[in-house]
Every structure is written in structure tokens, then in C-alpha cells.
Length: 337
Image (cartoon, rainbow, N blue to C red; front, side):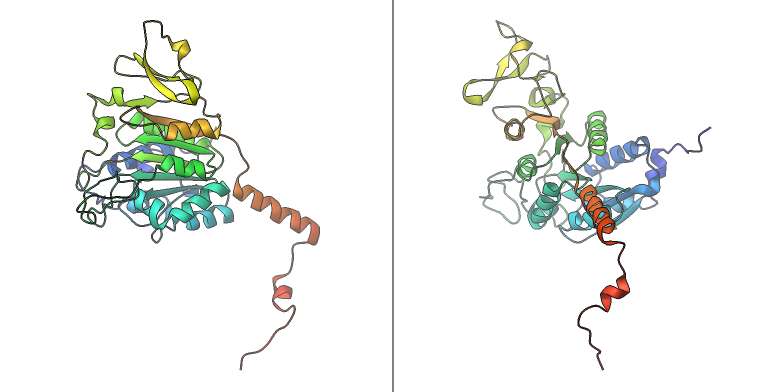
């Protein structure tokens, strides 16, 4: 008989009062994570949640796991140190579009290119919420905010494209209120060996309410969202009557099924596909296309912490375990008087 104790959501709920604004999409993400963690077959003490600065970065306080609330944009550096020093831990980063893609942009790129086995949850609300409503790296062109009263003239980042440009081995997109789908994506991210980059559309109902209404509202979302499933044709629409076909010059196009167009004419999603294919999906969006959600790319590559561990083992085999005291007293030494 197994001595393993079954965990529940309650085991991952801390005693801290959740202090996000009522109605914030962060609640839905927190609920999904707390429901998924007990199903992963990992002891609670093996989880670590790391964050930087922002509304999303309160996440470690609300999880009954080990956690680290870092400084702005530096969660990837902290999480990398944690994972490399103890590869057995399941390490998760909770970050926002500003924290990850502005001051933390350099760190998120290098975490991704190294392929450290860490799960990145990017809460994207297209605004700086904690500092009361300035435009962020993902805000749309022309966005009027307190810091851009006449409209932002910045071209926004596409987070999925940024991750792919850094050679991400796993990229996915989810929506805060699609609970079953979000939980599927979180499980897939955990199962992947390497950096998992998950962009989550998250509504900030105070400073950017309705930014993702076309994808969240049950009345219209089916016509605006393309739910990707590996090995299945790209079909969308409330009546499942539209799809994505590859046109000439490798450009996708939206087609209506019927009148000579069948499912066999449509593109079939391949999460193991080329970078070019994944980039195409990363750049799909309104008004021409629905927004792809789900696992966009998932490929196998060696992980950083495994390479570090193997390198250390090889050097020890070649040169022995080493002697710290001998190292400290080797070469030139001096005394401070």
C-alpha cells in the first residue's frame, strides 16, 4: 500500500489574504494553478514559485509552497539559480507583461535560450496595473494611458514571437477564464523538459477592462479563437464552419467550409513543426485571423541544468572532488592587518 498522501487544492492555498482587485483575472489563474499542482504527483515541498514586481508577482504569497518574491524583472535569474542548485525542484515563475518584457526582457530571453527547466507564466493584461495604468510593452499602438495621454507610438511586443526568437522549446497561449483549457496548458508546460513559456491573456478590470473581451465573452469568443490541437485540422467558429488554409507564398488564409472546401484542405497543427511555422502562428491575430491558443510549439532539446550537472560530474571524474581549503590557499595570498 502506498504511503503517498493525496493532495488537494486546499494544500496549496496559503493563509494569506488574496488582495487583488475584485474581478481581476489573476484570481482565475491562481485557482487553476492551485487545482493543477495537486495532480502532478509532486510533493508540495518540491514546488517553488518565483516572482518579480507587479500584481502577478504577489503569486508566491498565495501559494502554500516555497516561494521567492524578487525584484523587478529578475525572477528568471533567481529561478535559474534555484533550479541549477536543486534540479529536483519544480520551479514556476509568475510574471507580468511589464516585469517580463520591459525591465526583465534581457533576463527572460536568456532563460529561454538556455532552456532551463522552468515554467514561465506570463500574465499579459497589456497595462501596468500595480502602478495605476501606464502603457506596457504589449499595449496596442495608440493606447491612451496616464503615461501616453495622446496615444502610445510604441509597436507592441508579441510575447510568443519574442520567446520563439530566443529559441523557446515550449510556447503556449491561454485565456484566464477558460479554466479547463488553462489547466490543460499548465499540465503540458509541466510535462515539458525545458523552459515552458505560457502567455495568459488576463483581464485588468480596473485599468484595462475589456482588452480581451473578444476572446473571453462566450457570445463571440468561438469566432475569434483558434484552439490548437496537435495533429488536428485548424477549425474554428461557433458553428465549426471556418478554418485556416495555407495559401500561396506560405501565407495562411481563413476559409469557410463547404462549397468545395473540406477539412482535408485545412492546415493540421504540428507542435513539433519548424520555427517558421510557429512564428506564423505567433503573428496570427485580428482582424484577419482568430487568435491561436493552446500549445503552439513543443520540441525536445537538452536542458541547461542537466548540462551543468553533467559537466560538473565529468570534471569531478577527471580531476577529483577538489579541496576548497586548498583552493583558497593556492597561489598568492596576503594578510590584512
